[in-house]
Length: 326
Image (tube, rainbow, N blue to C red; front, side, top):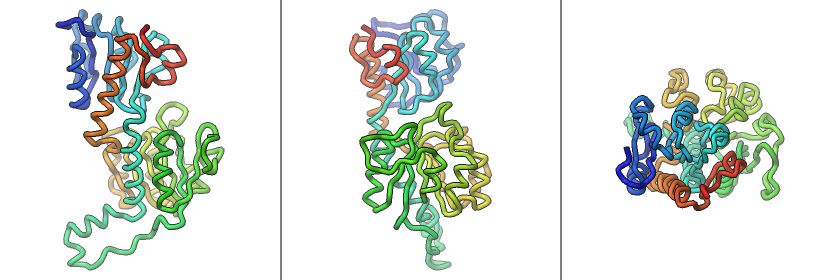
C-alpha cells in the first residue's frame, strides 16, 4: 500500500535500474519483477494508477487494475502494449522516442560495417592468435563501395541512419506505408521492390500486425544472393525460419541482426551460421541513453498527474484524446 500521497506506480517486469530509481524518487513504486499479478494484494490492485513497463503488458493485467490511468512504456517500439485496448479503457500510453534515436542509428551503422566487412570474424582471427599462426585474415567478399541501402521504415531512426550512411557514399532508398514528401531519397512502393533495388536491406520498422513477417521468403529472394539483411527494428518483422533457410542456401549472402522473433532465444541453426552477426538487442543499450529513456517515462507520468500535456503519447492515445489528465 502507498505510504504517501504520491500515486502508486506498478513497475511490471524487469526494468532498467536507473529508470526504477528515478520512478522511486517521484512516486510510490511497487516492482513486480516476476510479472506475477498474484503477488499484488486486492488493495494494491485498486491503488495502482500507473504502470511502467519495458516489454509486454498483458491486457489481463491492465484490466485487473481498476484505477489505472496511464502506461509508460520504456522503449520506442510499444507493440508489447495493446494501446488500442488501453484507449478503449481510457488509459493513456506513452513511449520513449527521440532520446534513443542517435544511439540506435550508431549501432545500425556499426552492424552494417561488421556484417559487410566481417569485422567480428577478423577480430576473432587477431584475438585467437590465428593471424600469427595462419597469416592474414582473408579478403572480404563485400565492401560498402557502390552499394545501395534500402531502408524499411524511414522514420526518426531511419532518417538518422540514412544521414550517417550518406557519408559513406552509399545510395539510399526507402519503403514506408506511404511516400514522404520531405526527403529526396527514391521511394519503392513495395518491400519486395525495395529489396530488389538494394544491396543491403535495413529494417527499422516497428512490430505489430501490419509488419508481422513482412520480410518473408519472397522479399529475401528479391534481395538476392549478394544481398545483406540488417535488422534493428523488431524480430517479428522477419519470417525467421525463411531467413535461416535463405542464409543456409545462399539465397542471400549475410545478415546482421540485433533483434529476434523469440528473444532472448535464438535458434541454434541461426547461431551456427558464419554469415551472420548476432547482437543481443543492444542498439540503445548505453547507460547514458537508458537514463534518458527512464527519465522520459517518469516525466510523462509526472506530467499526467500534474494535469499537463504528455510529452510523448502514442498515436492511439492521441486519437482518443488521452494526451493529458485535465
